Image (cartoon, rainbow, N blue to C red; front, side):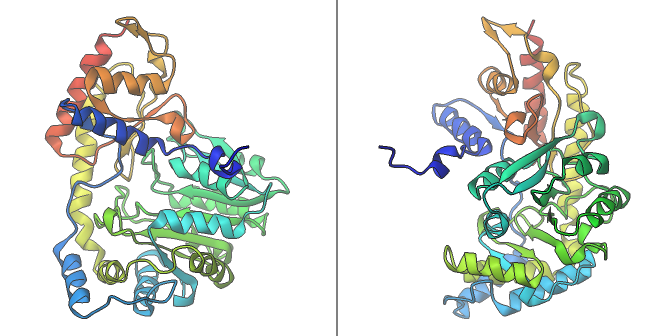
Length: 397
């Protein structure tokens, strides 16, 4: 008799978390590992946000809050959506959760029935695929290549739509590729969705503030589809608040109510102190994020310049987030010291063991020819990591 549910047995462990665990095991054994696997800024939370949290503690914000978040927080997020994104979500259309990850998971649980299809462009964030499976839906993957800057076309989306399509789920700026959809590219996608009025569009914009193209464009800005767009965001990446665990979504009122209902039966509201910190973050002038964005841009250019010295890596230049996603397939079939690299998993394990650099296999993101490198690390770490990678790859024949 199998005690565990089919649901949990069908889920895979997050490979970003798995690689981080393997890295820690090597570090604990005394090996100097440079970890470029986790998507976490190496900055500290800005002082004005920490001050808001301290004030909240002193003012006894230590009690239960409404399930979707404090009224003042949802008002602040509503204002942020208007100010930064030209999106009109009222407070009752907003649900704050324990991270954008929860926002996405319970959204899918609220809309997906067994057999419903969710279109997911690949490369996709590692948890999208598993979340759709957890909701008993069917992920329909559209593959984008490095030559297309890892962005899907309107024609590809049109071809993937069937009578079972429930939603389209994507991120811009994208994790894991750093690709950013332009306004014109989004407009072409919108033309497709206009033909299919029952499809929900889920836009993950958690990397909004780490955008090197200029103004961030939300797909919810397009009037013809805005009443079925769900915009997911949070403070983890742009404000270096990963451990605070606050994300949020703006959605049609009926769908926000469904997410609120789901959250009420799982976690209820997220931490009251973290909510007050988030309120300060989203109300702040977004210019406060510019220094971090400038640092990420400098690191991107530094890492790209180093990786371009390695002939076997095929690169696109990411326009956002803090990832590089090279195609490494030219190394498949090569060997060193009796070890042959057959796929991206082997490639990343080779770099971990031979170069002591932790990356993540592209298979985790639906792109088995690639690997993900996070450059959310100090400059000297990036330089050393690139040097180690080059030396290890030079050994392959």
